[in-house]
Image 1 (cartoon, rainbow, N blue to C red):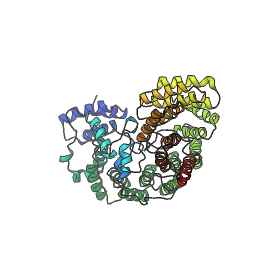
Image 2 (cartoon, rainbow, N blue to C red; image 1 turned 180 degrees about the vertical axis):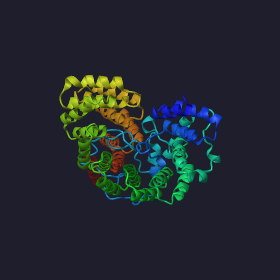
Image 3 (cartoon, one colour; image 1 turned 90 degrees about the horizontal axis):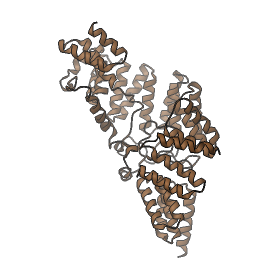
Image 4 (cartoon, rainbow, N blue to C red; image 1 turned 30 degrees about the horizontal axis):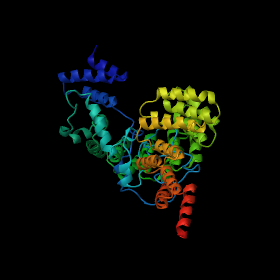
Length: 497
C-alpha cells in the first residue's frame, strides 16, 4: 500500500501518532515534499489541540494588574467582579474555595480567585483547587508546550527561528495549517501573530478567518482592546458562532457584562435559539447574581438541548437553594440517568434526599460519593456529611467529619469555620479562636469567620477586638444583618463609656 495513502487514511481515522510516524519516515526520504510536511503538521496539531474558548483562565496578575478597568467602583449590578448581593444572600448560597458563588458545574474562569487587593490575592491558597500560575497565559502555555514536546523525541518538527514567515504567509494552503501548528502545538503566540499579520496583508484584509486568528493572538498576549477590534472586524465580514463567543469573552474579561449581553442578543438574531450563545447569557446573568434571568435562559437551553449537563445542574442548584429540594432531586436524577457518575452528583443527591425527608436514600448516596471521591473533592463530601450530622443532632460525628475534611484539604476554610462554631459551644474559646483565625486567613472573602470571631470576642468581653473584626465581616458582606446588629451593640456600649 502506498505510504502516503496509508498516512491519509490514518489521519482520517484520527490515528495521529501513527500518521505522524509514517510522515516522518517519508520526510527522511524527501524532505521537500510539501504534502507530507503539511499532513504531519496537521497530525501533530490535532494531537494536542484544545478548545481554547472553554479552557481559558485568568491569573492573579491579570485580575489585579488590569489596565483595562473602566471604573474602580462600578455601580451595583454592572460588574462581574463586584456584582453585589444576590436575592438569596451570601449566608444561604455558599461560595467555592476561590470565592465565587456555588454554581451547577465547573465552568471557564470559575477556578480564578476573587481578590480585591494584591495582598489578598497573594494570601489566597494556590492549591490543587486553584492551580494557576501568577500569569495564567504564559504559565499554561509552558505546561502544555512541555507535554507537546514529548511527541517529538528528536526535537521540534519545525525550527521557528529559521522559518521564513513572509514566504509561507503568501501561500494560503500552507499558511493556515502552519498558523495552527505554531499556535496550538508550539504555543508561541508571538510567532503566530507575526504569521497572521503578514497573511492578512497578503489577502488584502478580506479574509475573516485571519482576523479571528489575529484576535486570538492578541487575546493570548493580553492585548484585549486589539482583540476586540479584530473580532468586530471579522463579524462585519462573516457571522460565525465562534467569533461571537470570543467577542463575548473579551467583554467579560473587560468586566463589561452588558456589552457582552448586547453581543449575545445580536448573535441570536442571526443564529436563532443557538445553545452556546444562550449559555453565555445565562452565565453572565449568574455572574451578576440575577438568578431568575439566568434560569430563564438555562430553561431555553434545555428546550433546544434536553441533554445539556450545565443547564440541568444549574437549574437543580437554583431550586435547591430556593428550598425546593424535591424539584432539585428530579434534575439531579436526570443527570444520573444520562450517565454522569461522580462524587459531586451523589453528594448533591444525598443533600436533596435529606432535605426532602427521603432519609432511606441519604446515607447510600453519601457512601457512594465517598467511594467515588478523590483528593480534590473528598473534603467537600465530608463537609456536607457534617451538615447532615448537625441537623440530626450528632455533634460529635459532625466534628469528626469536619476534621476529616480538614485532613483531606488543610485549606478548607468553611470546615475551619464550622468546627470553630461547634467547639465554641463546648466553651473551648481558645480552640474556637484558632479555627476562626485559620478560616479568615485562608479565605478573606468569607464573612462567617469574621462574624463568628467578633461574636465570640463580644461574649468573653473583648469589645475592642470584637469591634475591629466585625468591621472586617461587614467589608466582606455589607448587608449581613447579624453583623450590623452586633456593630450597633458595640457602638452603644462605647457611647456609654
